[in-house]
Length: 219
Image (cartoon, rainbow, N blue to C red):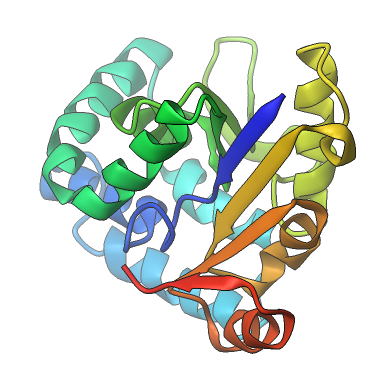
């Protein structure tokens, strides 16, 4: 298999998908007007190391736990329409190059699946590997995570699990593998592929990319 893997937030898109979702819901009265500020505060706590990825997931998902699955799907469709004009042409072109090369294009993101599905579809990606949100017996989201989040060192396990379900070779045995990311938390997966690419990298990832001679993209 020839594989092109893409992170989402600040990589394929130059913004945070969870924040965009929260802002869009608040603008429509689905969430309180102060929901974006509360989400931003949680993101800042995460960046400062005082909040973990599970807490960040709850901040995105728990406020909509009351929505039934049909309503959530309707909102996701409206969100997709709103996000389409915000997708960078450069990201579309990047994905298109990998499509033309015959690579299997996969979004690999820590964001929850129902948000990841929106962007995977908009970019025309073949598959999605994301953090799986728990649901109750009625299909409502609970705010909790099933298994490990698709984040940091867990991303490799998620990718390997996905490859196994495709009856494909392990990542190390793929004929070609590339991964695009902005964050140092993704270093384990970046180090595991043949072609690691830093996109608008944070300070630590930029230092690692320069030291290792990895390609750096700024747009």
